[in-house]
Image (cartoon, rainbow over all chains, first blue to last red; front, side):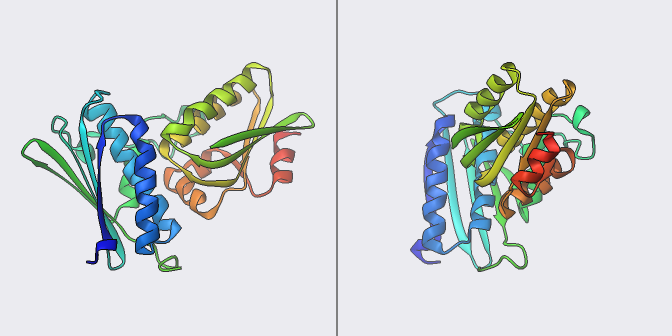
Length: 147
Length: 112
């Protein structure tokens, strides 16, 4: 891995920090030559994880710490996300959205985690001492690889 | 995100540029609810220059569509980029919202 293929950022548990997350991903993708289609998936996954941590993990407390690391590997990008909120396995504890239902009775919740699962080739959670660690890997779909 | 709007016959076309995420969803939601409160019956959203929509952005579309439908008003989207289309597909929103390719089709569908 060369220096342009790995980078990390530290955030506070504040919604406004998303601005920095998008900027960080933008610059990382430009340096590592990652196509836009993958960049927007990184946006989605990082935004969902960060918002979940800020709202549910830290309960909107603004002094929590969040770490986000990106690693561009051959044909995939890995996101390593961590926080120091109480243990919470986002993958196990969230309900599925009702994707099939009609507009009128479609619920608003549950969507974010569903999208995470759809976008990530791998999505793992572990508790490491005081930290929640989520590792997500995102691969370009066939046909949109290095364009 | 920039939000502009144009009146086109009986419809209002809301032109978005940029990205619709947790940070920008709120001003967009407020903009739409102001138009609804003013009595707009046909709202069309131009997404040609939107490159990213997160689940928080999708939530605004869903809530607005529900509110307008309950009142027999129309809410139509058009001009989704391939990246945004993918997000709509994954979320299943492509099946529950009215989405068209062109502005003319969207306005016609809205009844403009």
